[in-house]
Image (cartoon, rainbow, N blue to C red; front, top):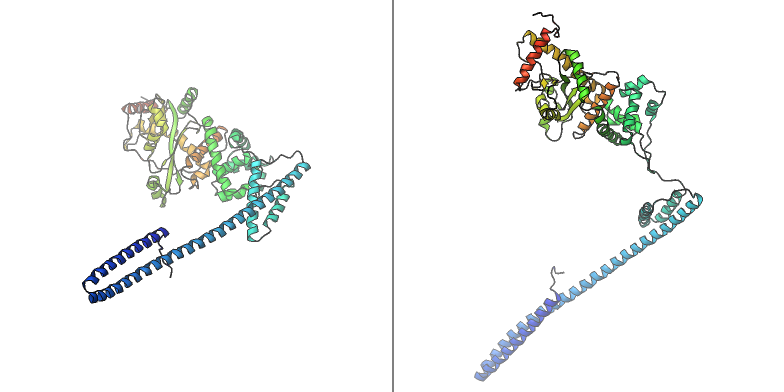
Length: 522
């Protein structure tokens, strides 16, 4: 039976010495007692001596058994230590043999690769040499695979060497790519493809598409590698625009363009980001003084209201329920109307008289009313800094009346002039509402819940607004849809006494100068 704990060798020696010393003391004590008793009484000494001798013999016997056990334990410990040393030596020898075997295989394969490269260089002197780092990595990886194969079944080194020799014969290895058909895109990209069909597919003509591709070339172009050819710029832009225009799932976009699903998703985000960085500063910005003057004239020609520089509207874009802050994105009004749980984010935009965006604010949760979205926008900050002093931006009844925001009257009983004012301001509101209808009509992805992550959605929506502006400037055909956005009157709808007086004066002037559609004579 093997003991679970064996005393150390030093402990055994100490105990042995201690027992010997104790035994000697006991023997000396017994001898002294025997002499004293012998002088007293001979017979009593003999019997006492016999009794003491018996006890002495019993104690000595017990101590000898303990010493013997300790010596056996020490012997067993030495045998186990020798056994473990023998096993460790055998394992070390085995590991050393495997290491030498791997090293020999790697050196052998290296010699074969060097011979293969030398023959390739002699056959074609103009071929570029591979980098030393890549060659070393290939040798190590192939040799490791060869050694593993040799350990499993043998013959792996020879097979790897044959493969290396075949690869070095002059044809470069390429990354395996699944073959997909690009027939549809090749047909669309051809010069013979009809203009109307191209415009129907991409919501813009070939000229506008070429303009966008030329603008984005420096931002989205990639170089070919030895593993694969890069996707051309035109195909990259086409994937993004087609996805935005149709809202098709990525698996269908993948089949249509002959690319992988993950590749299509990556291209959409990359091109949208490039549009936002490269094209937005050029095609979506606040107008300069000359443009502001023309905008005032255009809006006054439409409504008769002076100093109007923009029409403002806020729409909702449906999204999939987010994982965080779900309640903030819950759209109560859409849920009640459609009898289906809806989540959304907001897009606030200001447009000029042609329906071109001059300012956008994207990404606030759908539970926020229009007036709160306005207060959090960069437009509000610029207006607070005096940028919009002396001009008006016309909004719906969902916005408050402020020094620079002009909204219609909302009370139930309106005077003649107030009613006429609401009709005229409604014509300006219609400009922004129709612009958003064209925005959602062109880019169908805005009408359905998108697969894009919430953090990437502002980039995609911003790209849609920029592409909308380009299409409007190039007079591309309109594609509209119905808007289903509710307007909620803010709790504090009148925030400026000066603005109230200015609105009353505008309403009076409209009525008395025949701009309100009536022939009232004073």
